[in-house]
Image 1 (cartoon, rainbow, N blue to C red):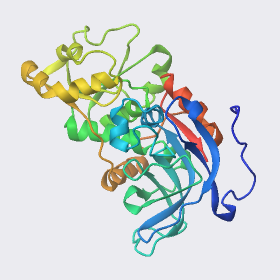
Image 2: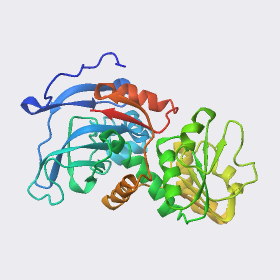
Image 3: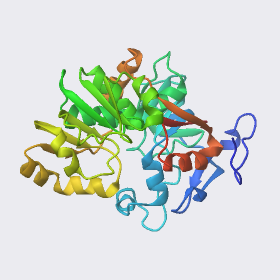
Image 4: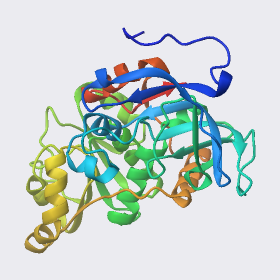
Length: 342
């Protein structure tokens, strides 16, 4: 598939004369504000690593930054009127081309993957320059495409379950939005941490989610999970499009509800009122603010090497097709992750 009005990929070495191809954003709006352009290749600082990007993946954060909504995203990342971040994308995998003199962990030729969300983004390009703290070595047996699908979504699942949800072996865990990028990793990580997992998704996605190892499946088009009488120690909500109050009766008396994705108004409601809701309901109601870090990336690497997490990839797009990939994601029908092959 190819999209209209984009520069076709050139042949050969795209970094000739210090240039590279990248998807550039100069205004807020729909995917029409994105264009494939020739830009300057990054220069490596003493503490930086230059990575030739082989694959990236698309996240909801990319489309929110693209559109500049909610408005708080402009305050957090700069650029009230025009986007400060010109090249989106924070999940990536690639091969190190050069390192600064102060870099100790990596050397040219190393295959790496990482999360760039704390380091300026820039994964939708042929090259990116980033601090070594954003990266870990890619498992040898893992493809660049699979590795690029992991960081942001799997970090969200890991920290939401382990740190905020304080998951314990043997607990009963409900994963809402189990077919999405975060939810599909949450099913696998919860199983790896010893929980009994019930996954919630729609009819057409159930077979693929079941293959991730869920113990029980609920088709939300047929069954209201809040009305079935079952109670859970932990509800992990990666698709929060209904009130948190609807889920409280489905929690055990010491249960925890963790919101990690979905409606922005729902997210802010839990951020602002979560402590109050916890007091009146006598259940823990939390939301997650992800903190990318190398230690957790190494944990994910161990899960990957052990076969405990394997990304679901919905579709792969070429770098020139990033606008089409984001339009696809915005439709909220993706199973797993969308990957960009650079």
